[in-house]
Amino acid sequence: MKRYTYLGDRMTDPALKGQACAAVLREDGKCIRGRNGSMLVRFDSGREAIVIGRLLRKLNHPD
Image (cartoon, rainbow, N blue to C red):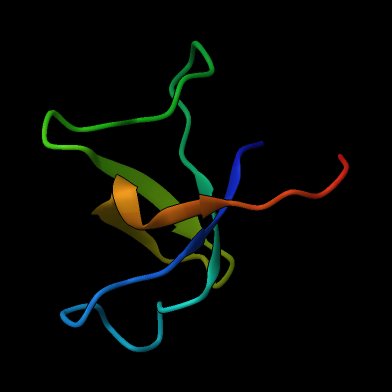
């Protein structure tokens, strides 16, 4: 599973800034991305959101 930290920007809900999230994957295992660089993610709280892909940072941890 692809894990990220969402940095957020000044318009982001403060509850989402700095939170860990996972990419929502299609059936073929690829991330769901939009044409404008957005990405569908699921936060650890269970909330799903479409966020700007440039503001995501990969978490480096052994799986």
